[in-house]
Amino acid sequence: MFRSRAERKVADAGYDPARLPPGQYLTDKWPVLHAGDVPEYPADLAGWSFSVFGEVEQPLELSWAELDALPKETVVQDIHCVTRWSRFDAELSGIPWSAIRERVSPLPSARFAIAHAEAGFTSNVPAAALELEGALLATHADGEPLTGEHGWPLRLVVPRRYFWKSAKWLRAIELRATDAPGFWERYGYHNDADPWEEQRYGF
Ligand SMILES: Nc1nc2c(c(=O)[nH]1)N[C@H]1C(S)=C(S)[C@@H](COP(=O)(O)O)O[C@H]1N2
Ligand SMILES: [Mo]
Image 1: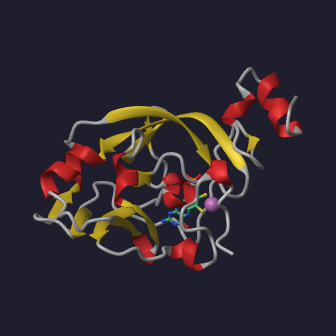
Image 2: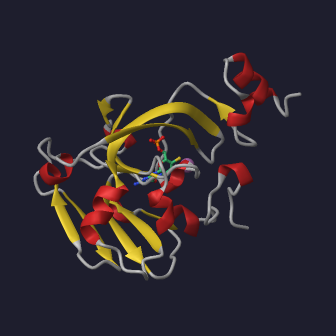
């Protein structure tokens, strides 16, 4: 009836066990995972900017005040880490990609998106992944500004993929005609990262 003990625990917690992707277990906590150090920023984010460049008609650079003034959306979604924890009903808020897309007007050649974060971290997804319900430039989680370790002031949230695609401390989105592996992808993580297909590693 249950494929695993982890699924039984999900059912015991009152959730549909089908929500748990294969090989994952449910946690109530929100573990912290990243390479390197949490970046330090001035409290007023002076000098911080978010930009969009590459295959766009109109490159964009926004200060924190300009970005933070855009209308925000809240989306409740499940997050799945490749290290096997899943967290259900994470409430994430921020600016939907559509609000940015409208300003930059991607060219037809813009098929892939690279998230650029602090300290050279990158992650890659098809540009179409940013159009999905739940894709956000997130500023808040569970009603509070992101904490430093979860990506304050801005992180990408890419729905329905392992969470390593969701770059913390996001500074830019590059739209490209060709794909390019990101930081964890170059370490051997799967390019597509679909938890339902268990696309954990690329080999
Ligand atoms: N900038 C940056 N973002 C990153 C990472 C990183 O190393 N650097 N790691 C990714 C990985 S592997 C995971 S699982 C998630 C973890 O996010 P969390 O710490 O908020 O749970 O962040 C992703 N975003
Ligand atoms: Mo991860």
